Image 1: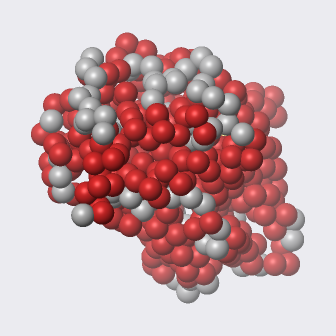
Image 2: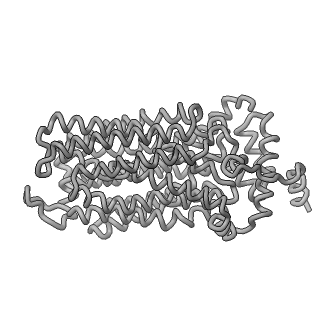
Image 3: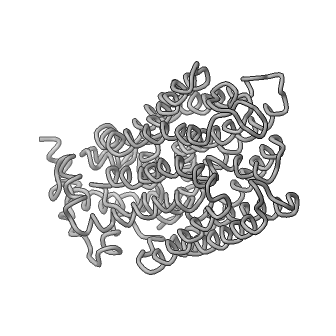
Length: 499
């Protein structure tokens, strides 16, 4: 590949960053519930039970588990099918735009909810928006990024998630210093979620459309014009010819939207690839990170009694998350996707083993006997967990899922696979507070086992995709090179359109 001129490379980075703002919204939103679910004003406002130890009105652990369910149901509804249909029919940018609109509107509803039912409906509405954006973003980034830096570009996706989480926790920390705010301590955390979509909505259509989608729709000249904006001149025609050849062959074999879903579930090779993607996306949530996203405040509360201390730990954790995710931008295109997943999984497994052991040995009636040293030890190991998670199962799962499917099924397969995260998250968001209440620190032995088993399976069964062109993934996964259309495909298409 010829070096891409700096101005064009900057355009690619800005476009990828703009699309990744969907993940910023996701990171901010995922952390809002973690911030507010231990807030005394939020608990008093929506409380349905009395804490016997303090006499305060609180939301019960069972009800707390139901609040994220609304969000996950929303993401599942739009994420499995609606996002991919919009993406295939009207372009990769439309689901991102519509999703941001929904996040904007339902954040208001969630902020000013008169009851817990309306609050959950607001969470569900935000979930509908995220369900549109999250499958479309990785597809868009993967299709416009050059293969030499595709992993690095996709790492931006996870990086801005950590940035969004940081801002959510920071707002929560600052608001927590001011008890005079009352209910606004938690309302302001949720309401400021509108800032990101306000900036995102006017900018997404300033980014170029995916040239692969344009070719898929028969708009080869438009694709060529965009390729000259994001590639070196010498690479445009060879890459465009390859894209056109493969896409035309795929369209001849599998025409129609519903035929694509049939292909995914009836073609053994596609079904195998879909199963592999579903597995790693499900495991991403079962590593323990989902529970830390939603309930780290409740976990830290077991070892630190001060709410401001918990908020500060969350802020520091999110800063570390940003720094740790940078490792993915450095290593994903150097040592490869699978090596990162394996190293990260074993590191997370050992971290969870130590957390579970420390907590179980020193546990006594819901608290830690030697609160300061053991609390610091547990907190440190949870930070070590984040160190291994962020650049590996955090960022790399999105990279791998977004690049392994042919374009004919890419939007649909990516939607199904990534929404498996929300199916797993839905179950775990409800079960984790119940598990933590019943098993306490032994809960983390479960996460230890998941990480160690999943990493081993990934090491044994998953092929490396680093540096592989999207059009050559069939050869990597199936041991075959997809038949190409005739080398005059571009000219034939253009002549056909003129007729």
